[in-house]
Image 1 (tube, rainbow, N blue to C red):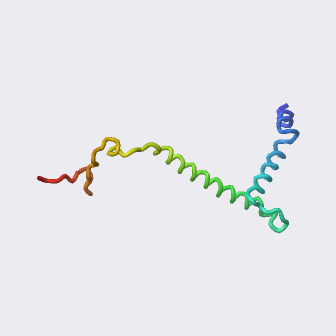
Image 2 (image 1 turned 30 degrees about the vertical axis):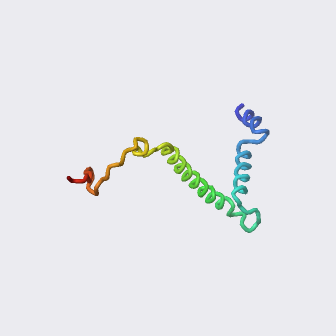
Image 3 (image 1 turned 180 degrees about the vertical axis):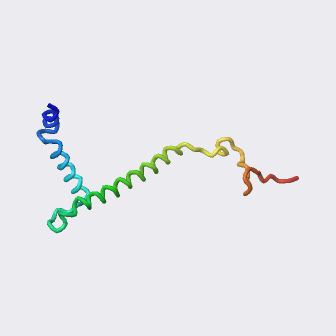
Length: 99
């Protein structure tokens, strides 16, 4: 019964045939070749190009999330009108002018 539902949902295509068609379209959209010389390697080329595409998308997602995270970060000295403290190279100490 589930096979009939899948057959009707996919417009008369079986799920395996549907996935093969999707893979063919994806493969050629990535620029795989369609000549006889490179036909045995089309799937390998598509896998490599897909992994490069996924790595670009993951990198872009991290960049965008960092931008969104720091979207409204404002330096507190600009908001309050005060001068920021000068911090020396030793952690936790400030360099104040001695009188």
